[in-house]
Length: 178
Image (cartoon, rainbow, N blue to C red; front, side, top):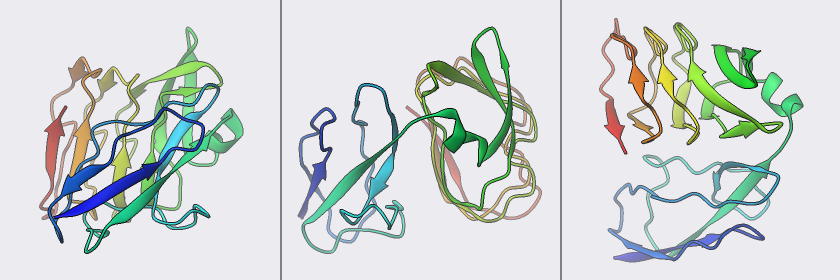
């Protein structure tokens, strides 16, 4: 067994966890920092190396570092979206791949939906953090994607359309509902 500690800076504290050495683990909580969105866990204090659950398994005691993000400008770089009734609906992922973060809020507006084909044909995605304001995942939102092994769906999601996780090619991944 090894200990995993969390540096949340000015955000809410998260207690250390004791986990199995060499095995992936899930962090059940995310820190909250007023005015910011949680931007993921990093393995270094300079926030240059994102933590990937299945790649960065602990072999000794380790510390993960919280990153916080803010503003619509950051978000525009990774997604096309529309705003309706002060809610954000994601329509296409245009980011570089790797670790994908869908924040709870952008400029005070909740991110509530992943629309159909948002992640169509992306084989360069390694992990996801889905925001806790997410309410729906539309048909084929994750259409023919590959490269990751698990996606955790937050308890806030009320509606998942048929074939939201549609895979045409072999990809051994699981959908976990929190």
